[in-house]
Image (cartoon, rainbow, N blue to C red; front, side):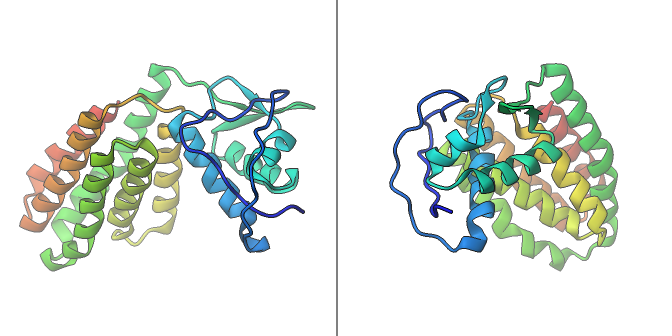
Length: 229
């Protein structure tokens, strides 16, 4: 197996049958190759470098990242389980296309799960426990300020995941994360101002949670998901 993962953010990846740009492999631990490829592909999905409707082959992407086709194929199979791509026999993997209705449905399902959980946490979690989430909320603000959708997506998932983890239900966290990822690709073009406003809602939500303002929390979370749809 060739080893190394290297990508170039902002440059579309070659689709099946297209040219694979030459890259200089960067040595990595063998056991981490699949994970690095999976992270790189998730980033490419969020940024739009992997284009909805396009078919990508594992060998072509392997050349692009400087690895063999095997870890790429394994990573793509994981993305298929997450609903980001679908298998095209003898060709590769097609990036899914989602319309506005499907994205709105995902936002609705996320709200049905997360809103009551967060409201319950507002009633039961002591004020001092919320301090641990402050750095994550601030990280979403920093990521939003960069205007980078991939950086913001990662910080957004981290904040929501840590918040829901306080419910002590691992299945809930897994399901919510899966829905969150599905809602983030294909990417909805959002400008820096929209990302900054979204991140500001995290800070406002955390302030309301710390203050024990249950109704304020309810309104903020509902608005947060309404904006996402």
